[in-house]
Length: 307
Length: 303
Image (cartoon, rainbow over all chains, first blue to last red; front, side):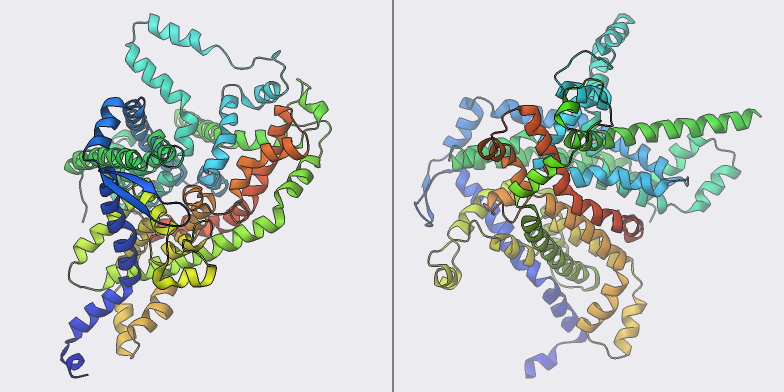
């Protein structure tokens, strides 16, 4: 009791602060810190699970798992690079698409509520189990509902989708760089992925746009700025900090659904090669965190913080 | 005159884009719905577009029977809603702790929250699997069940959620932290002067004021918990609790028990199943969506 009385008000408050975060603190230490350490440990070992509900044994094998993953394993490096590559294609597209959409949805118009509800729909439908089935819908995107019905009906009489290759060839003949065209065509092909991955980002951007004070736009208007200038000089700098939030969210979200994760999962629970799976997890996470850090640093340099 | 033409064109463009993107989002859902109510005659009729001539609910009836739909969905909703309630409670508490108290290592600990957001769950899946496979603190599990390990039950998910490490808990803590920091300090000071304790202030005053953030997190948590298959797969949670797992086995069940071997017809049933699975969460979202989007706008999710 004596000891308690000596605590100042501030110290008491700080103790209560610890009490508030206590559940998380225990969980974080047990589920995250401990697990991270264990994952590192697994990656340097050969792990054998004991039968029944028992534990496991570890045998130290040094860098064997790493060497195997990067030198011998057939598909790891490819999967990693293609996952990262897809991520680098998707992230800018998702960010710009969601910013664009947020600006559209932020304006007042009739039926805005319904449209917003529709735009968040992909987040609800974005479950693994449902994704596989919805990928059927993706084929449909090439020609609308009718071709899908026709496809299911195993009748190929009606072709509503027009010939995209013709257009692509036309642009290549114009002399446009093939790289740009292929980027655009991959983007168009992935439009369904991009839209369905943008739900949360659109909402974050809408929130960001709401937080810009209207007086800024008034000033811009009085000074005679065009809509284009207003966007680049007012809107864009003001939402810049939120672009970082969105980039972080997009990268993490994109990575969580990528092929590397599947590979790590099947290696562990399909092939029971736990050590190798730990290496896959660790390597891919490190790569992602590195990219994350680089991109955030890059954007942060150009970011203007209002406060 | 020129101005009004320009205005009209801009509006037209906007409508076109919104309708186009809206269609891209809705098309798969509409397609599935149409496909699932089409009868076999419609299925093989290439002229059928959007409106089946002989719509039938028989696929739904069969799928409901084979999935044990109502019982499974009730269990799943109970599981999801209780986890959501725990998420809101724990994450708001932790977020409040970070927002309003000063203690040693606060910066470092908050970096831990950010780390939780950025580290993908698969990095820690193996240790979690191994831990829960032989989980037996003080022999409690052995005493209750006979053998150690809590795999195949919902215990791991509840345990992680209670300790603030459930599905995307890091994000929720972040949202709550951001929101509480935005609330004026005067509210708490007034409560303190009036003699309210910290816990009373938190439960009766701050949490009530944080309603937008609560709704935001509740909707996010509801949706993501319901859709989560990663943890459900990792902890081998039964498909009698997590209904979306039943979708993946539906085609197999149908071909075994009902001898439906035609892939197109199987797909019709799967479509019906998917729509049935998302239906409750969709209804819930439509009820909450207006307050949800307002909540996001006000809750400063953006930091």
